[in-house]
Image (cartoon, helix red, strand yellow):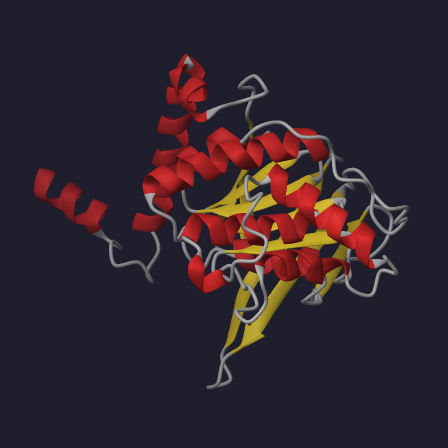
Length: 288
């Protein structure tokens, strides 16, 4: 993806360059159909600095996606407080969101899907078109304006979703396993593209993933979650700007990967809901 100038802000004061995120004593539970109460997030204290890239990792059901939805204002915490900058979170242009399943509008063109994020913002047609075109160039989709989602590959659809999330210059970008459905090669290329886009615009990013390698490549910090709680906050000091091939050559990368994978593996093996639960116990028994 070739470098291109930043997308103009169009004077939108509702967005900013990297807002901090703060969770203070945040808990959230859900009530199942049978009336059982399930604790999804438990007393989370977490502060993310402006323009920082933070990855959340942990076993399925550990509270990662719930924490993301709390940060977006889509859910209210049962206890505790959340702040984006100095204000409680609320869905809107200051927060961009990218999901695993793209969530594109099938009857809209690429241009109109990306421009959808700016509708109601008071831009005239010419300015809107210019901003959409500039953002499409940044994600490598120049010339695809008039195509529809069904005509695009999975990687291209996710580029459209990313362009839509970034076009409003959000201070915060929340990403819920955005590359999980892509093939390995496309996923790695998208990771490099995301890093390049983040270097240009510098939003604060909270990124949910199940991949240890993805977390290490992208993040300044990796937050390990288990049972709805933050178990570890691991700083990543790999130099920036990063590319996947360079990062993996670093000696520190291998050490961090071994540490994180060991931590995640132990959490999965200790989870009664996991298909792998108890295997370590069996192995110990066989060794005796």
